[in-house]
Length: 267
Image (tube, rainbow, N blue to C red; front, side, top):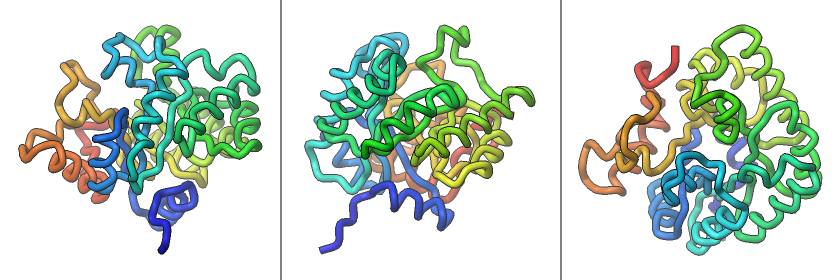
């Protein structure tokens, strides 16, 4: 019987066919099963769990132990979706060796891909991990682990120099072996430009409708997270019908590119 589970080859094929990739954060088994049944392609065990599960005011306190625990929970049930886990702050910046050791722990817990934040500076680390058999997703634009450096959750790519750096970062990560990129909180035209600059899937999170897919924090799109929320978040529970219906509405909106709408993009 054919294996219908998502993998990095199928993600690349979705990009090639122009079929948007649907991603959501996921931190536990019941939602992992539900999201898979509803057609979500990719489950992100994000360090966002620090804010939505643990109650912290940023992602920074999250540890590898935390992400590994939630990865095991997500991986405990059968789902056709690919599981991608975040490398949390402080678990990969010291050296490529440290990064691989952290990535190996998440893979042992059930991750099929790991994600790390940073552009050109992290290219060698991406290469080191990839060469050792672990698929890597880069994360550029607004990188929440750098929130203190930004002075808040600030839109990136607002001027020509910033855009040029983001494009250089995307290309450097691809050349280092990254199999996918997450692009967060940039104007929609920047999302379009970066998607065109690389050959790997680009998943937008507040990066406009022209990316190869979209990701949201599950609690945000279910209307659970208290305001204020970023402008790119839509409450898919507003139509009623329960959690499953909300997720199906999200899947359909991403697939048809009706999400994000113009009002949900940064100009």
